Image (cartoon, rainbow, N blue to C red):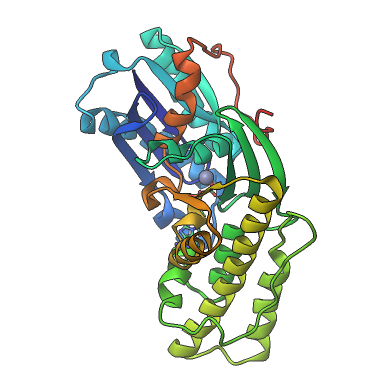
Length: 332
Ligand code: KG4
Ligand code: ZN
């Protein structure tokens, strides 16, 4: 069954054709980084306008790369939230138009459910139940995944998301937007032990990153802005504090929940240091680690098709009054 996935929750206009929820026939992501870069973060009004002008072309390109036409598509899966409301409405309206014109079912997908479902498109996919850590620009959350469509939140950030911390620190240092990839690259030449930033580890399975961002801001205000090598040390030390926190919490949750299979997803799961440290720790402690390919960690529409597929396969459909929601809970 070929499903058209669509995603416009933030600053990526994305469409994908996925077969049976697992085989990616095409995945097109039109990023708006050039548009938002000068502002150091996403400007919602600009994001919506760019989605409007891009969305049809992106869908056409996804169909072309998959060598299929709209008559081959048997269902549409579209992100309905959480995200920027205007941005979501663009994708949702386009998806509903396609479903209406073709008389095919449509399902609205929770964006986080999409990130978790990305792992099902990998050849090495985890058995259920598994522990899921979603680390993105908007979320840092730990889940027990009971079945596709059934999730229990174990912990989340009290303030900034991990990706937000990367973006804000990059902005402080003038490294551009999005900050995560820039810091990841620069940190490869730095010493992660050069500066001892605090490890933000609140009680239980919660996270907190705003204090770390403030610690970096204070370090910058107390020191003259570093030369290239010191800048690498600075970002490597910051990155190490984030990575330490994520690794510590993930394995603490795995032990508490008695779960052996661990999935880490979302944009920050692209981070090379995080991937390496997770791999080492999983091997040392005897856990099974599952990481998506980087292009399916950051926002994309293939993951939305993968998440929507089980519902479409069961013959479910949402109605055409389906609405976008800036915040919505995950199905329990
Ligand atoms: O999942 P995503 O594409 O969008 C959201 O749902 O938020 O995640 C984007 C976030 C941004 O904060 C970006 O800086 C971060 O993921 N990111 C990274 C890396 N690549 C993307 N953070 C650290 N290292 C990376 N290599
Ligand atoms: Zn995302």
